[in-house]
Length: 597
Image 1 (cartoon, rainbow, N blue to C red):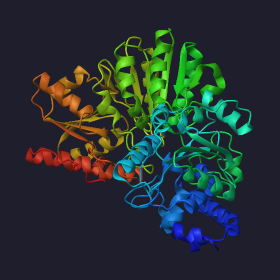
Image 2: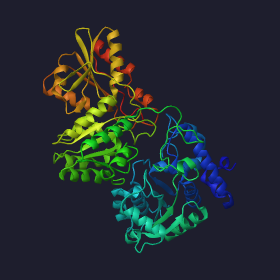
Image 3: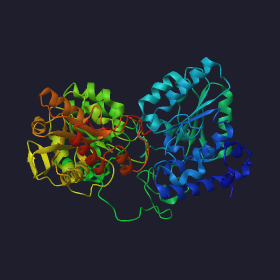
Image 4: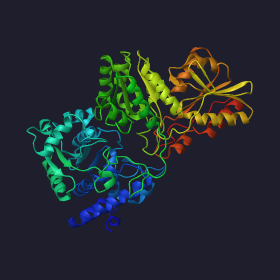
């Protein structure tokens, strides 16, 4: 076994070149075994084994900075930099992060998992080294062809290529992000791979260009990387790799080459156990129904057709799905144009990626009062992907957008109903947000009042506490209400359905209770609770409003349920804090800011 002898890049450099193919096979077997047990990004890492070996044999990490775009392709880098023994806890609470993490190792420089960023880091890092006189330290940016479809990457290249500052841009070209790379860039890279291109975009932007190089041939990679380093200028090394290489289930997965997986059987590549109803799956079925009813409905996504549930819609209505690449800003403004043209666009992204296009939502959509619907998958605490993938900022950001209406369904039936209501709105942008995971449990309402769903109305009088549960927090709020009533207090549980702007009837209900407690899986600062407290203050309703939500902190990776508990959003903690407030008339004690990082 060679892998157990590699605990540092220096061990790798000492290994004879003839042993590298065997080492590469051991690394692939290790990745399949470990990631099959924990879940994670398997396909991308199987594709960069030889490339990462070559990078660490040529460069002197961490003195030379090797940064990845995006960071999900860093597993092999972690194996080679002394973290092999921590893979049993990959993406688990307290365990190894699924992305680069500066707290784990000096070899990790950038904690990036949002795409198209690394060349801007490279630009700044090389500029800093030029100004501080550290001319003997190389900066290497490893960027996927999918990440190059993002505008930020080209903004950086516009500056970096003509800077003259030494750097190596390693283009990991596997022809895909999740799905195949789209647009003119994909065509240009295909021409370069085939040797048929008469022009070279990278040279035109000031870079030297080496390649294409076989990304699975370590000697060829080492030669190209050594040449790039010796040029002492901005250089693109074009490496052609195969996503999912060496694992038959990944190589034959047409959807995304097993880009991101849950727990699977390592032999068959199949997930164990019965399939569950997921929020994404419910959305996927309902958007097909709406598409059949509305020929004006067009779906827009940013290189995530399969992950956001649009694959069935794309099969049924291929001309009505627009994949813009990893370009959320462009997606939103393009959707604005579709709406101006009389169509009804639905923009489908992960909630965390909406952060990248807030200006476009504000100025290009909301300012024009355009009927664009945003579907935010993986809203709230997502779990194992960590701080950059929790979708906890959207409610606070959307609360500042004039005219936008935000829906948060509590179960699958409400997701279907609220999506239908959202696309029917013709004079304003709408948002439907839902979490990652199972949507198997239905939560019926006992009544509906002016658009609000009453989930529980206590028999005890007086009415002590009004629990306002945003979306998927409803189950925990109902369980908390039961505990509060066992302690002798009356409780009402309301699902607002449309959480922003605040329904005036909700303010009226607040006035009839001693205490209002809002529960949401977004930031407790600036979200639903903040908006309700302001509405009550404006209406001169004296009832105190206490907000429970995610603290203003970067929440680490871990199990979703565990992280919700740590944020104080489990039923027991909700009940305890409500009872304490009722007993003492003291403010609730939120999770201290910053304690989760």
